[in-house]
Image 1 (cartoon, rainbow, N blue to C red):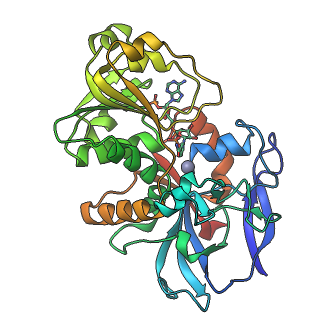
Image 2 (cartoon, rainbow, N blue to C red):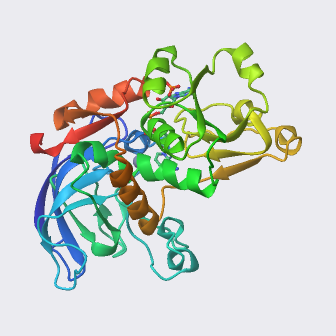
Length: 347
Ligand code: NAP
Ligand code: ZN
């Protein structure tokens, strides 16, 4: 077994605290990774605080992992000791169902195995995430990271990056199309960067007036304050695609109405309350709603290579491990520019 140092949530109410546990010894297809950086996703907060229900404790959150290969199993062919690698939101899946066979392991018919807050496929081990010193992962679920990218700024690509890249690709965003990104947080700012890189005319729709200058700096062409109801009304039937990254309960109909004929509302944000929807807002312009969860391993590698090519990374605030509880509070207040990333050397 491999000893690991970490920070964990022991229940839904207490702050995260120092925690020690053991990783499995590496098997023939496993890669052992020394974790250098781990991004802080709002899903970490939802799950540590049991906002979706069913949380498993003790929980070491973290699924935006960047590290260096420390050791490889005898059958591992893709990685060598010292390689810079990433681990995202999943660490296993059945590998044989129709969705896994189509390289969409995240939609595995048996359910993907999450990096944390999940039981591994041995049926008993609690999967533990990246707020830790080391992780052991099957080779197939390990991504290759270009040395061209700053490792701390690349960490959020493993979740925030792929979660916004995948639906924008699925919606086939084309140059000149009007794309709006709702919520300028970790996912949102990556959504802006990708939509801009695809040549779209990009609008940020935000509750925070103070983020307008940043939206423009990130490449957005327009900024719309969602609390300004007059301005919102002026954008009725305006957008081809809207990417909704909002983490808190909100009204989807308000955004549906902003879509043009056959426009698509891409939902990636995961508030806990079930939304209500107006069917009239859907049928009167043949609009559609599409949900999307991270991306498959092949698509994640494609996105990482695209980012290395275009020099796209996240805007990060690197923090010591001990700052995590304050970082959570700031994220809940929408006060993050635009992703916290933990430097695990501080653990
Ligand atoms: P984040 O960094 O905290 O950003 C969320 C943003 O939502 C905030 O910065 C804020 O932007 C906006 N917001 C917050 N409260 C709001 C409210 N009441 N009304 C309207 N907007 C509000 O969170 P994140 O890490 O990007 O994650 C966003 C959501 O995506 C979370 O629910 C997370 O669980 C989910 N997620 C889904 C997937 C997937 O596979 N589908 C993957 C990862 C994460 P403004 O200040 O600009 O309004
Ligand atoms: Zn995430």
